[in-house]
Image 1 (cartoon, helix red, strand yellow):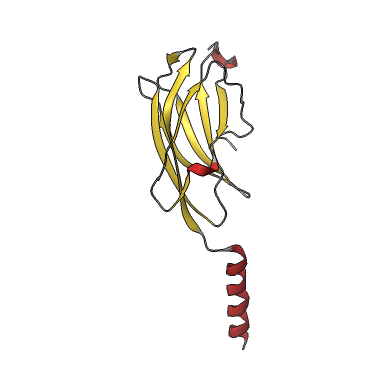
Image 2: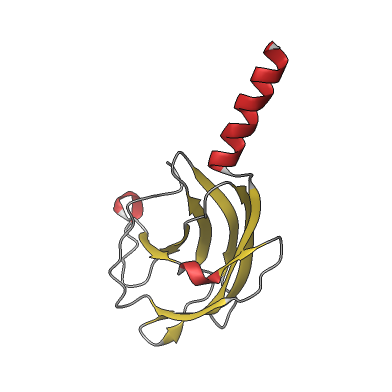
Length: 141
């Protein structure tokens, strides 16, 4: 009888919360710094979930400032993908006091696909020289 009750309670929880499902998001485009290609810029794709942050993918731009990558997560709720960009654009490197600019951009939910393959990439060109969306998250968190 206890096993039956436990099974009922467990199945009820799954029905309320849902089963974890694979979700994928992809982004591609160009990074520019004051109109010029931003080569070698490090980018991280995160899922900023309700309880924890998960790194989905990371990449550096090529010599033309181009990037293309995707990430996959298995979650009950819809993922909240964020693009975190580390750049020296419009920043001076002066020894120990210098700090890279961190830019965070939310990826629109319509680019989240069910399954393990990207159905539609978020195609975006980002001008880092004027981007002021500084991060509230960082890789150290």
